[in-house]
Amino acid sequence: MTQNMTSPPKPGWLARLASQPLVVFVLGAGLIFLWDAVVPKEDHSAPVTISAAKSSRLVSDFERMWGREPDADELAKLESDLLGEEAYYQEALALGLDDGDPVIRQYLINKMKYLIQDSILVPQASEDDLAAFYAAHIGDFTAEPEYTFSFIRASETGLAELNAADDGSLSERMEEAGALQVSRTFGRTFYERLSEIPEGDWLGPYPSAIGDHFVRVETVSNAPAPPLSDISDKVEAAWTLAKRKELELAALSRLREAHGLEISSTSQ
Image 1 (cartoon, helix red, strand yellow):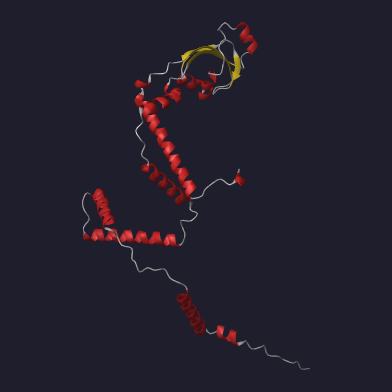
Image 2: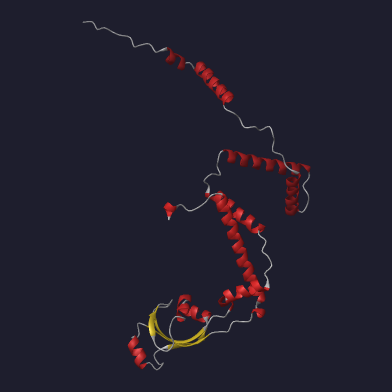
């Protein structure tokens, strides 16, 4: 019994060419040459040079570190290192490595803030400026109130019993205690709440840093506001700080407007 044996099909001419290393090399070189001829190149005809100012800064930095000027070889190495850094920098920009980098973004934001702050010139405050500012912020220059009050943990008794029978033997007491003393024991929030508690009766409980307490405010001592003439330096310093902040916000507003930045209505 005989079988018909058929030979495998011969590869096409493209397959035969692809199997020849020399042919593949020639074709690849041709494609590279064509790409190099068609794609425009960046113009590097203007070399990056080191200015006299940069060279002087290199010398100054070296002298500050080593206590002497660099010799010719050391200066040449400093300049070579600077050009190397510039090469890294330019290549990073060309590759877009600065895009989307949060560290670089924050650095540029901070640098822009410093540039704006340095460019702001705060005018000298007039007497009318200081008087108006002091009147509007007089509380910032007046000592905080002092309180005399009794207190007891809410877990130890009830409010009705305190108002009916407390003679001071059950509770504790602070006399003419200011913000620092009260805050150190009960916390700042508790001190600020004392201003809301009417004098005379036991009220609460009020939360504090050491638990809930019933409180009876007995007296409140408010220090008088000092004359402007006594604290004019402090008022002027505060006015200058507030004015600088106002001018910085105005500069930022102009930047936002210049770049067309606004909050989209869809995000509100």
